[in-house]
Length: 287
Ligand code: ADP
Ligand code: MG
Image (cartoon, rainbow, N blue to C red; front, side):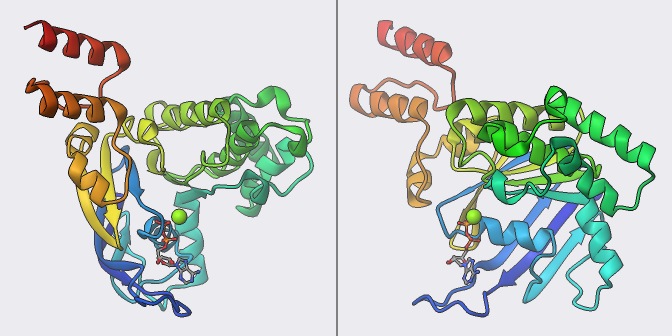
C-alpha cells in the first residue's frame, strides 16, 4: 500500500531567513504517513513542524527532495493551479487561532464556505454542512454568530469547515494551543472521532504530551531533522533523548525513572494512566 503522504529527503530554507545559523528549516527530512494513521509530530519551537505541514499543503515548495501525496509527486514547481487545488482538497489544515480561520458571520455559512468554493450543488452543500456540524457536535449552533462561541467551539466550527470538503487527511498545527483545558478536550475528542470513526488520516502537531500519547505513532523533530520515531511508549520511554529535543518528559516516566534510579526498582518505563502507574509502583515497592 502506498503511503498517503511521503516526504523524501526534503530540504527547505526560508529565503528571508536572517537568523545567525542561517540553517535549513527542514534538513533532509523524510516522513511517511499511511492512510488511516494518527501521527503526532512533536518538537521544540523552531524544529520545523509547521514548515513540514506547509510543504505538505503546498503553501511552500521544497528546495530539494520529493513530496508525494497518494503516490503522486507534488514537489514539482511546474505544477498546475488545478493540481494544487486537488491536493488542498485532499489534505486539510487546521491552524492555531480559530479567529483567523472563521470568515462568515453565521456558523453554517462559515462551514459552507469551503464546499461552495468546490462548486458543489446547493443540496450537496447543505448535506455536507449538516453532516460536518453533526460530527463536531455543533449542529445546534448552526444559526449562531461564531464570534460569540467559546474557543473550543470556534475551533470545532473551523474543523467542520475543513471536513465539509471531505479531505482524506487533516493536519492540525497546534490547534489546541490557544484553548482552555475544556476547549482542548472538546477538540481532541473531535480529532479522535475523525480518525477512528470517519477514518480520516490525522497529523497532530502539538506541545501537549497527553495529546501525543493518543497517537498511533510519534515523530519527534529536532533542528529540521527527524530525531525520534515510534509508538508513544517507545518514544516517551527515552527521557534523556526527549530532554535533548527540548521536550517535556511525561510525569509517569519521570516518576518511575526517579524511583528506578534512586531506589533500584525495575519498573518498566511507559506512559501509564494514574491507576496503572500507582499499581506498578506499589507492587514494585512491596516486593
Ligand atoms: P515549528 O513549527 O516547529 O516551531 P517552524 O517550521 O515554524 O518550526 O520553523 C522552523 C525554522 O524556520 C525556525 O528556525 C524558524 O525560525 C524558521 N522560520 C519559520 N518561519 C519562517 C519565516 N516565515 N521566515 C523565515 N524563517 C522562518
Ligand atoms: Mg509551528
